Length: 114
Ligand code: AMP
Image (tube, rainbow, N blue to C red; front, side, top):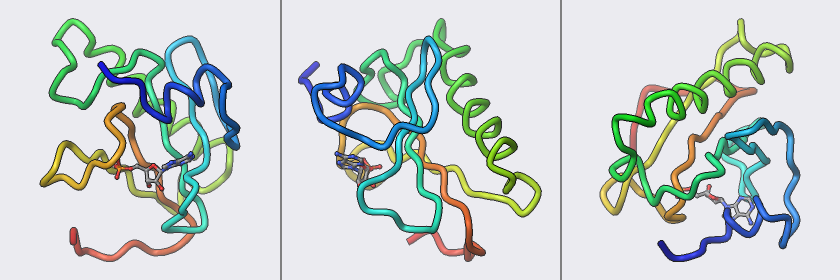
């Protein structure tokens, strides 16, 4: 697949405000935050979108979600709550084609989905 800005962040070629890392996942603050907390959880393996992830990688998808919930607990907003969003392709509003999970928190989210 084509290189994206997220692969460059993973390789530390461009800066980002990194808040979490393990073997499979890197998380950093969104450059254009839509909430007081807006963090992107990105698998180091550069899948273009969720559509390209094979069933054999179910653990990786779970790791993304669990990294987000662990971060919420560590940062102290797990009980107040948060929203996880993954945009897929054009109609999903995806703009960076390296799969990622948005974590939004720090304000009440409303019911709309755009
Ligand atoms: P999506 O529209 O789901 O593909 O989300 C892409 C997100 O990446 C957007 O919320 C952008 O603000 C964010 N973004 C783009 N470039 C950067 C960057 N260099 N560092 C951090 N976040 C970025």
